[in-house]
Image 1 (cartoon, helix red, strand yellow):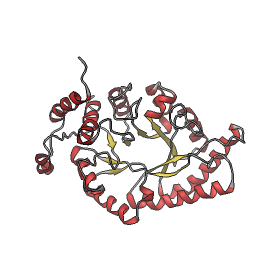
Image 2 (cartoon, one colour):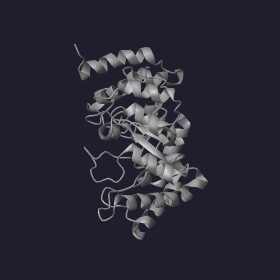
Image 3 (cartoon, helix red, strand yellow):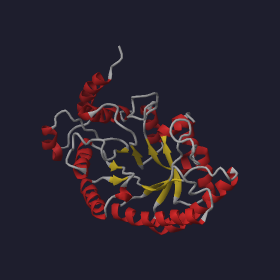
Image 4 (cartoon, helix red, strand yellow):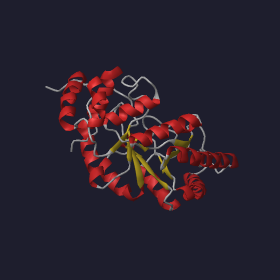
Length: 309
């Protein structure tokens, strides 16, 4: 008989106890919350702020401590550039203390304008200014990667002209990023469910653009949720794009919730990524399928289950 979600949470608690021992340094914390499992994860899964707000209601630093107690070794925060400098610095200090790594934050993205494809001066200057600002944020929070979503189609230009404009602008962005080593990761977003107007929507398209830019500061963010919708065939597509992939994000389909809630076999996907020697960050860019603490435990246990390969 299949487990329902409540049964799964209960089963996961037992699995978490078996699979991940509590570190002595955090034993007191675990004694206070005996139902929260911990695991030494094989891969660097990165939660985002708000994912565990019920277990850590004291704000972003409290959430960071909770994430580290569970065993997560990275953080993803798309909105980092919008945070006050003082908060960015406080987050960075706490992550350093906890031994956590910074994942992506968003540098530039538009869902209404053809910012990379139009070739217009106002779009170009806005993008270059955003990238310069991102360098300062990356330095502050010790980030290696930043997300670029190149905007929508320009319906007044043939696709090949748009692609050429995007490649040229990305090369200019690389000139800005190169001295610091910051890597822009291009994120294709699916057309069929969420973002029908976006210029960049498939992994082969991103691969071609990265090959044309031909710079270590321009790579692919492989969002597994988006690409399950756009293309499927996930593991072979990971292999085909591998030389240009620098970052992954997760989310099951349908629903864009934690692994185990949809059709994707994340145990096999994670096993494959691990076997290829990936040592970067895998951002948990999805919602929780259940509300409250129960939903937060379901997220933790889903990653424990899928990391147990």
